[in-house]
Figure (cartoon, rainbow, N blue to C red):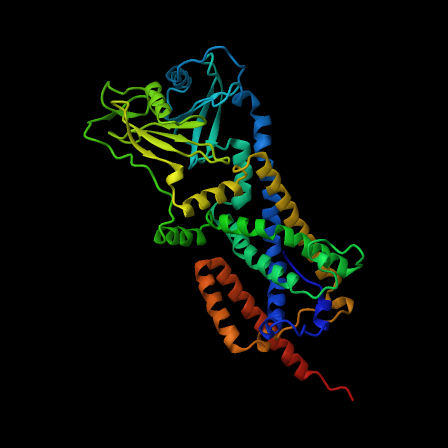
Length: 465
């Protein structure tokens, strides 16, 4: 829940049944929630708007690239090796790195190639009709999800506004603060005195003016808070500074995603013209590799990755990230066609599974269309919260005669025994989330300076007779 809360709450005496600690802490939480919402909301608004666009990017991609992604269904399917050769013939300068066979009738096979001049994490994708071997088009493919140009453009807009590494600061700042604003708003909303508990989850339609806006702000935030927390947590895994700390923490707790062994054996090898490394003249070929993977229960959608170094095996991966997740992998010896290693998703540590599911949910992959609809609803909810928050701030601003709805001094009302652990927690979180720590410190310094200036001005003002 972003931004502000109704100022009329300050006029009410604290509820006697609530703990004194929360009564003293509430003004501080309210002030932090208000100012964090005001200052961070523009970043969240950009993230929500671009996230809403990204939620629709999968359908946009299917429409824009329908010719490349689809092919007329046929009675027979060419061997996978023939399809790869068709792609190589069309682009002889490219080095084959992987192939994604057509998983369903009506789809094309995607052959991935390294080619000079492409951006980082980008490959050339050649789309081949699996029935005729016709090349139906060539596009750039970005990242492990295989995003094509339009979805990759939207993804970059959401991640860093096409500003590169400096642009990632916006998204990291938003993700770092989103959970704080959401939890602070949740605490303020559920502890607010109300005559009808039903209005905790349903807006009070009888309310008018600022109370009505607050009712909608709080109720929408309550419904959205869990999703916003998940978006914040998973978004931080992609961030520049906090992301490094997240990786170190996962490694220390042994929560990292396991990887399959692809170390080479005793075979001498070389890099063939097609871009794969194998024993001279003894590569069993992609058809044999696909059969070996099928014998271990792997089935489409698949990605078959060529050996990257001499002596390394082929790597065959299931890439179905929808629930139930299928991400089993096998390594296949390039010279014998035997499976040399297996990695089953069922054997992942629970933390690694949760991380995988969280990231895929953030990307709209986990539950397919339902996931994308949920992401769109969250984005709309976040935008709604921000608009309602700014509306409350504008209507309650001091220039309209409402005084100062978010007074300073909340920290002075709380006992040191409560503030001390909170201070230590803030420092620890600030170190783990550096951009949040820096912005929080800046907020506190500015707030103190403004308070000192206001106090000095009140002392200097002439007394009324």
